[in-house]
Amino acid sequence: MIILGVDPGTRATGFAVIQHENNRSIALDFGTIKPSPKDPLEKKYYFIFTSLDQLIIKYQPKFVSVETQFVHKNVQSAIKLGMARGACLIAAAKNNISVHEYAPCLVKKAVVGKGHATKLQVQKMVQILLNLDKQKKLDEDASDALALAICHAHAFHMNTNFQNILRR
Image 1 (tube, rainbow, N blue to C red):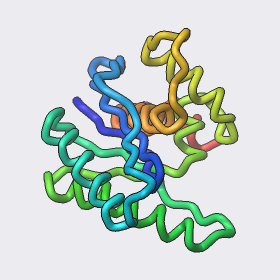
Image 2: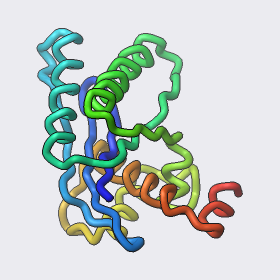
Image 3: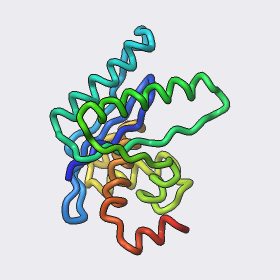
């Protein structure tokens, strides 16, 4: 089963493609989609959409796992983030792929074991779980996208123990 994880953002959208079989996940591709900072917003969203669409066409994921939106004090930032999420959702819908949304605290709990884990803890655990080169610095956005894909893999093959961990 192939899963596309997406950590949406206007400046940088993290993406990760993993293959999950027999309770083992392998990273096929991951990175960051970075629209030009000079482009107007509509071109940034289109760039995010087309980049994700190309990834979907290339890897044919069964699922897209995306972070749920949370609102900070800045409403304009929340609106822009929502539009970036929309580009992701439209790319998935265009390709008839099921979308699953996860709250950041649930992703952290699924990957690290605690819902208030730091970004660094998530990065290190993602490297361990996917057997990635620990000497290379893992981009935050790509790391979050990998964590989202791993979270969905765990949720898809959820067992009683994992359900109990998530309920705590």
